[in-house]
Each structure stands twice: as C-alpha cells, then as structure tokens.
Image (cartoon, rainbow, N blue to C red; front, side):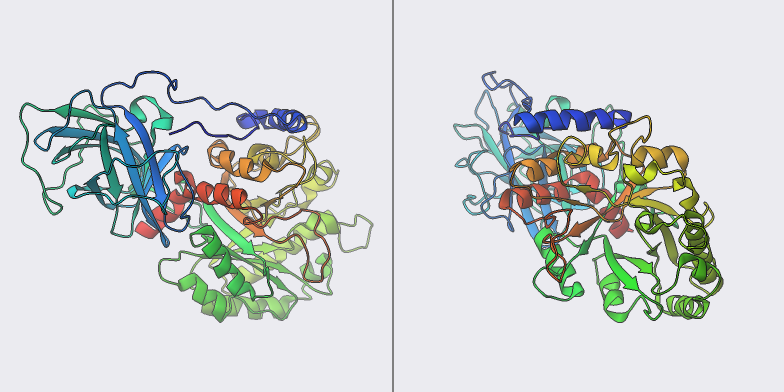
Length: 548
C-alpha cells in the first residue's frame, strides 16, 4: 500500500501521555506533519512472493480508496460489504497447474468461510474503489476461518499470473468479517505467496476440501474471540465497547437519531446512552428495550439519572425513596439484560462546600451510595453502576475531590467525559493526551492515570466524549481518528467509549463549548472515523459477544 498522510502527533505510551500533549501542541503550532515509515523502500526490488499491492473496497464508501490502510478487511460488517484485492511479485509465470501457497496473518473477525478467487489485473492500489473495482474471476478455494487471530497457510491451484504479477481476490459471503495485516505492516505479518510448478495439485472448486491450518511451527495466536468473555459487570476481556449518545441533529427523536448515527457509522452501537431526569421517569421504556433486543444489534443500555428539586443530601436522607423503590421494581420487571447506570454525571460542577448546602462532595458520596443501595434492595439486580466524573484537572486538584467517591461496594466502573477541542497543547490533543489531560503532572497526573492508580480494580470508560471540527486545524479531526485505535491498546483500563455526536448547539440554539463533535462534520473526518471503527481492537468485544 502507498505511504499514508499520517497524524501529525507523535505517540507516547502510558505515563508519557502528558509529554505527548506538549509535542502535539508544538506540531500543531508549527503546522508540521510527521512522516510515516514505509513497509519497504519504494525503489527496492520486491522479493519473490512478496505482496506489491493490497487494498479493499467498501460498498458504503463507493469512491473511497483504502490503499494506505494497515489492515485488509474482508466481508460484511452491518451492511457494508468489503472485498480485498492483493497482488504478488512472481519471478516465473504461474500457470493453472502450479501450486501456490498463500500466507495471511489474520488479526481478528468472526468465524466463517473465506473465499479465494482469481483476481483481475486491471487495478491499482492507490486508485481502486468500490465504484471502479473490476470483477474477479473464478473461486479457486474456500477456507475456514475462526474468530480472532490466526495464521492461514492455504494451498491453491487454478490461479494464473498476469504481466504485473499474481492477482488474488478475497471475499466472504456468509455475513461475517475477517481482518488481515496488509503489506504496510511488513515482515512476516505481510501477505505472501510461494509457488511450486513441478507437481501441480488438482484444482479444487468452491465447494471442495477446506484448508487453512497453520504449520506446527507457527506461533500460536495470541488472541481469539473463542477465549473472549464479558464479566458480570460488562467488562470485555478482549477489545473495547463503542457506543454513542446520538443527539437529534435535525429534529428527529432520540431513537431515530441513534439509528441515523449507526447508519452514518456503518455499524450498530455497542452502548446506547440515554438521559433521565426527575422523580417520575421509569426506565428502561419500550422503545429502548426494542433497541436492546433487536436481533444482532448487541446494544447495551446506558442511563444517566439526575434528581430534580432535591439536593444530594435530601436524596441521601430518603426524600426520593418512594420513587426509587418504584423505579427498582420497574427495572426488575423490565430490565432482562445488564445495563449501565450513572448518577448525576459530571457532579463536580455542582459541588458547594458551604456547610448546610446539601451539595458538598461528601453529600454526593452519600447520595450515590444511598440510591444504589435502595435500588439493589428492591430488585434492581441487573444494573452496573458508573461513577461519572467530568475528569478535568481543575476539579482533580480540589481538596474535596477524593470525598466524592462513594465506595468500591457501590461503584462498578469509573468514567470521565473528556472532549478534544480548544487550543493546543492541553485541550486540542490526541486520544492519549485527551484521557490524561494535564498541564502539571505533579499536581494532577491526568484522569486515566489517577483512576488507574487510585482504584486499580475498576474498569474505565469515556461516558461522553467528542472530537471538534476546528477550521483553524483542518486536518486535526481526521488525524485524531487515524491514531486512536493504536493508542487505545496502550490504555488497557479503558473498556468502553461512548461518543457524544452533536452539531455543537443545544436544542435552544446556544453554542456548546465542546465544539462540533458530529462524526460527519467533514468528509475526510467521516472517512477516518469509519476506518477507526473498522479496526480490529474496536470490534473484538462486539464480535466475541455476538459469537456467544
């Protein structure tokens, strides 16, 4: 694949995230772009059997080219069909009687059948799209693939090379998806072939014997969806949940906004975030349950509840108990599946440390603990609780900040609501900088680092977050998405992302300070976002859960 125009921000792992924000700002201010290393020098002669081009098409992005992607996606992911095209260098002509061994490093996906076809020669890596893709030839083999990582070594006959090399097409027609390392990755993980011409094997047809077992000396896969689980409190052992609070963008209902956002995203959300206010709302309701139970959607409901007209102390003292008991019984009757529940999210903004205010940090801790205990005692046994902070440095440095925490017995997850907006180097940054935002590591290590050290047993989520489309930095949003997946793998405590998709204004027309977070704010931003959602790490939790 051709060299990519990559993110202008360098990657720093773990505790170096704060330094990443500083470097980010320097690059943004200078308008610089970091160079991306090629898998091999452009003018180097390819080795025999090496891939010289590989890409894939996506039906829902008919004019987009994936030639610079590090992964090859094959198959269907919620309505978008992907077909892969690969070309290999051959030193001798490959005839139909030749035996070709194709090696592919599968990084993830779902179990099913991968088809290998004779590929056309008239395509280019940098120009191929779904709109101009030539038709492939005949199917030469169909092989089993399992969910998760594996190495496929597939014996093939019936292929013929062209003047520009051996062309192969990969497809899945069973509704599943397979992700494969592309030649960008380089080394042993890149696709390759070897050719034998002396003793040709009989040509298999599309219904013939299945192949694809790795040789005994191959390294065993380090991940497989077969071994992935989801805990009692909804923590996936593989990958990360991706969900959304999909705001109505054009006056539609919240339910329709979710469906529209999923259509824009080319996939269902793992988590659907809803907001409930006051002492009369009963949830989950019928509309939300229909979304939860929709076949193959795998949506987990996430509720954010806040009382009206009562202080935290008043709720902790029992003044909302009649409502909470009724709500618990409703949850017990209707919530057949696990769901997330956050209480008065972003509570730091509402703290009033004045004696008697009923809104001190300790009042919040008592409020949270009381609500959870009343709900549990009255049958709400399917809720998974989320302590949802704003997470910014200003609050983390307050003397009362630690008093907010109600106790490990009533908190299952810890969340923050970070947004990538504003000015570099602290506010406009990459994923790692955003979740560990700080301008002084000594007084505040960043929220992710703080929570990981303070409460090491708790999984973390971004309960709300978004990336602004800022005209002053026209490539920023797309560049953010291009490195986000890889950076998330360096943040193992993060197990869920719930995106806030908004036009940047409230329903009444007031401008939101977090900016324009809608993922389709610009075509290049949308493309980068959809490619992010194609990444294996973002799909492992979903795919393994569906496989069960």
